[in-house]
Image (cartoon, rainbow over all chains, first blue to last red; front, side, top):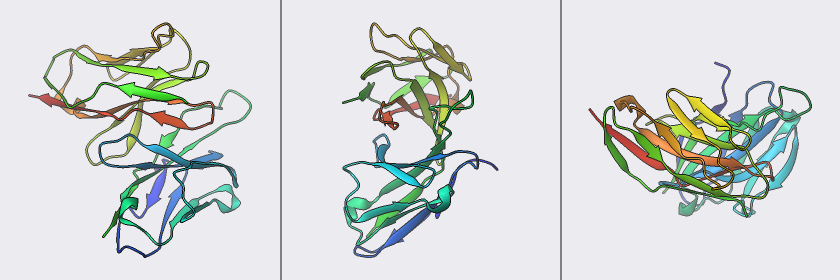
Length: 118
Length: 111
């Protein structure tokens, strides 16, 4: 399977605990995105990387959230001191942007990590 | 800022009925437009896209035409099947390199 993968698929935690999610993009993709989706809503952009550089962060991304993409491959999203309002589906997507015909604005999504904060 | 407004659901149809899900957008310039679908228990999948005015995206019997004059990208299918039951999201590619999604329309098809 060469799609975007995310782990874990489900995470239940208690308020105040830290959690970390992992995303493995499609191997040739240089851009990686994180989105958050709450029940009954469309996904909302959180942040994105081009290779290892984090180029944009949404105002939704409070200082309790941090994302990394070391070496420009997989990415992790950490939430510190979780709150009940953090309960959501966290989606990762990837795309290839660059010169040439293979560049595209189409993003391919992983299955998501569903976080429940008790 | 950029935004997408789509028809609220849920939408319930009988099998073989004609489907339209309305979508309009507000954006700077002429962004690429998408329809994504989320089947029960699965992740978001790209259904179709259009990159410029008057383009028609199509896939699996679904179609949508990029209408610049009405800033719309309505999704249509001539004869729906039970297997089309899912949540459908209209979206645009923002100039800020992110995708802006509508709130989704839940579609249920009765046998």
